[in-house]
Length: 119
Image 1: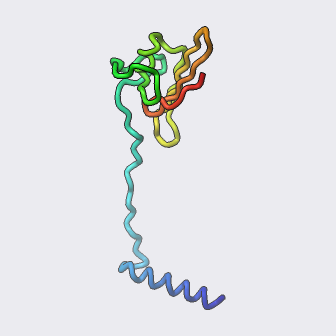
Image 2: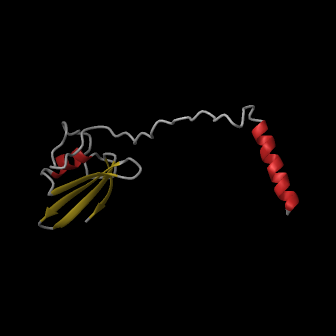
Image 3: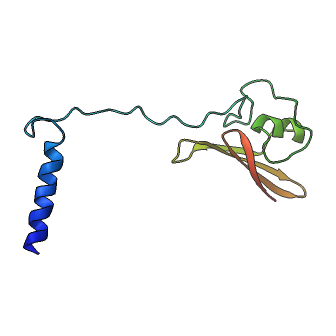
């Protein structure tokens, strides 16, 4: 056991010596820039359900991948409620609720792209 501790100490000393620096001198600290959240394109929904810009007209059906404002354009009416937040990974997450006579529909968006629908 003592031989393995001595070998580990010797290996550590060799590694430090290989750094070419003075062990009493602190090495420089490298500061990394903060991680940037994933980008999203196009206008998005504000918490009051309005779009921050003109709604794109490319989508013809409600399907995964469409933008938040495209959903509102395709539905033809303002949502009942909009919940805007951010995930722990820095992604924009939005929940859009439509309470209609036939039932409730909840649309989940991640970075301005429809991810899933719960009816």
